[in-house]
Image (cartoon, rainbow, N blue to C red; front, side):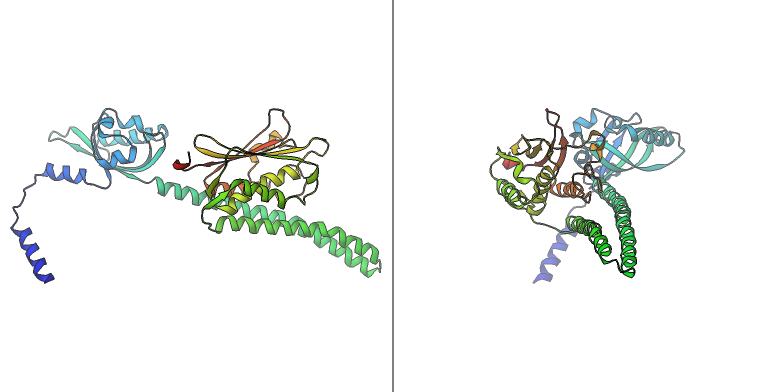
Length: 380
């Protein structure tokens, strides 16, 4: 039965009248239906004909493109190289050229494209138009840049971890030799005192190793997005941190102008909240009688915002450009940390699609750490 249907279908195709397409019609159809952007461009750069793929890539309609030239939407840093190739084509020095270049999308965003261009001439060998093939490679470019950035970051991470491990390990080796000498001499009280002093170095090593493992977890562990009640996360975090030193002397207040749930990754969101609040507790200015922390949430036109403000030690202006980098410590006298906390928060915020920022209150004292997260259109 199937063979009979296929046979009849084949007979219908073979018996159908054959359409004789001219070369121009064939080129037009191939251009219009090509999945790759194709365009005919005049020698002066104006667009003569574009297919739907080109319009989709740059966001302009055909009518809008035909009213401008390619120079108008080319990134200025790529324009000169493009024009140099064009001159070489017109001079017949080359037959075609390929390049990667950036176009401005109608929305203002940048589009990376792979461009291939050749020139069509008339019978008198005069230039008629360029044939341009445009392929959107924005996604590939972003992936390559992300891989390069990750490689550079990993190299720096490995270097800094090695550096931070070497110092306490060397110190501990020296201390152990001292202990051995005291034991040989029978001076057990000094040996015990030296061992007790080495505990700080061991604790520092332990914190560093834990921090490194936490960084790995953030990067490697996948997490599903779930509804998260923001106020619950804040109150649970405050309760979990209530054991911290000097917690009870703080005036802590919350103000939730954004009420409801967020669709986000719970553990990564909680880490942002935890770090902001724990830092505000850790780096409070104990010389002040009125130390406070304010946790505020609100909604802008397109974003959810969480702010944690305090009147603590703040971050010196010379260090603010390094705020979210790895192994940066700003108040070693107040707290000896690993320097990975805010770096991990930045990684979590990036994975959530959010943005971190820092500012100084109008009073000039303390800090405001801000986490912004885009809201879905149905929540705006």
